[in-house]
Amino acid sequence: MKQYLELCQRIVDKGSWIENKRTGKRCLTVINADMVHDVGANEFPLITTRKSYWKSAIAELLGYIRGYDNAADFRELGTKTWDANANLNQAWLDNPARRGNDDMGRVYGVQGRAWQGSDGTVVDQLQKLVNNLKQGIDDRGEIVSFYNPGEFHLGCLRPCMHTHNFSLVGDTLHLTSYQRSCDVPLGLNFNQIQVFTLLALVAQITGHKPGTAYHKIVNAHIYEDQLALMRDVQLKRKPFASPKLFINPEIKSLEDLETWVTMDDFRVEGYQHHEPIAYPFSV
Image 1 (cartoon, helix red, strand yellow):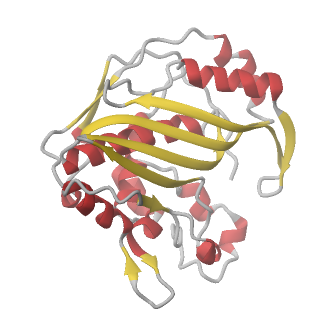
Image 2 (image 1 turned 90 degrees about the horizontal axis):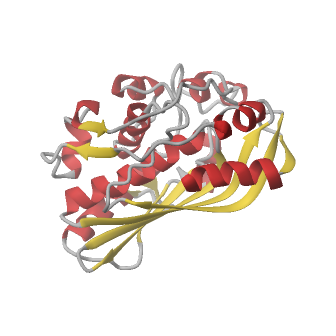
Image 3 (image 1 turned 30 degrees about the horizontal axis):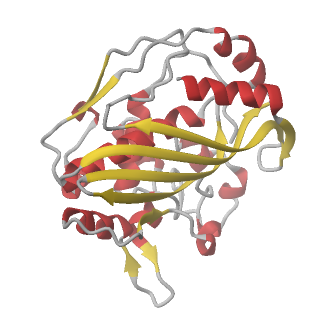
């Protein structure tokens, strides 16, 4: 919580106002922020200065792992995070590539599980990574990237959290995740949960100890209609201690994550939090 609140305060105190053309709103913005999470010590980075709906964040991550491209599939897992971008984004609604209600196009997990090469081949980045790590292989390129500029026009949103780079040191697995753009009051809460959980899951299914998750953010911002709530409410609250995340130990493979795993296979203990804050969401 300390590093999260320090970033929020930094934006409030030192941020510059930038106009965002996609949303038509101004953002108070800083460039370059680094978050570090000790996954090995199970210091689960849940926001405590407001209630966090952590199951929705993990459900979204599970949808990415499965390569989902439809908001209805995410809803079935337990999250509505893609409803607005799939169905309320006018540019996407007007896009001839859109295949109907709830379609998200070729975004996020689609790229991670079915990247299309120039020769027509399909590359499953996540499967390659898991296969290598299971064998103790780190070729310095154990990377899953959702960022495919050649197919931006085929999806409803460019990925914000775009690249996950795993590093195996002895029997300990680390993760460095890169994010080009971060809505700090809303998105970062989800993003840091997902970075932490992704490392914990991949370490578990590949037979390694989880180490440190490094989360690198380029553009960190607070929208103008979120600023008062952050400055005058959330930043005035005293944080609680970090809770713990527990993952079903029966999850032993990528196939398990693709098939039977649900939110019932995750639980959080020791989560104390303040009341929810209804931050506006920008499509």
